[in-house]
Image (cartoon, rainbow, N blue to C red; front, side):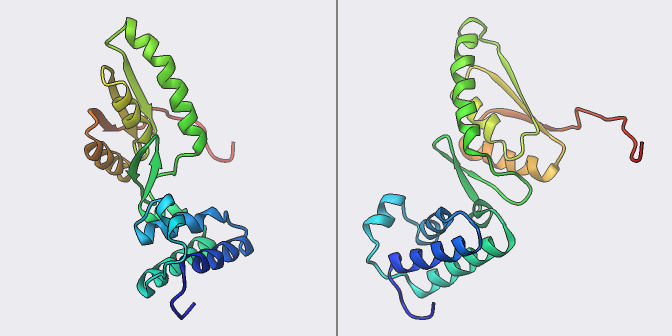
Length: 186
């Protein structure tokens, strides 16, 4: 990919490349949107526009890195979308699955009924990672008290950053809540 190409050409190359490497083809669209700094609608409306050489090089490097190493696209971009919000992510945290949004939707629906009768409701997110679940619950149910814990200090730093970015009132702490008495080899 050396000459200036149009967005649809670049996207076609990346989709084919990812398919050949047994990767999800829509990763190409996510990465191209990211490097062009456009929405999905803008990307499709501008398919005939040329892709600047610098953007194309960054995009191609990221597509190859994703296909060859399996690094999640969201880690390459440094963020993920969840419940209508953008959250920072890095290699210290897992990327939430789409099913997690559905779980949160049902949890919020259920908890709204409880909070209506018990305004002092407390929520604890164990293994918070990036804080996506705790932050979403705190923002959607502002009358609750939310605690979030993780054994990983690096993950907790990411969660704190996300909470600050979204203005979520959460108490974070690093703690290993569960212990096992298993000994290897027995």
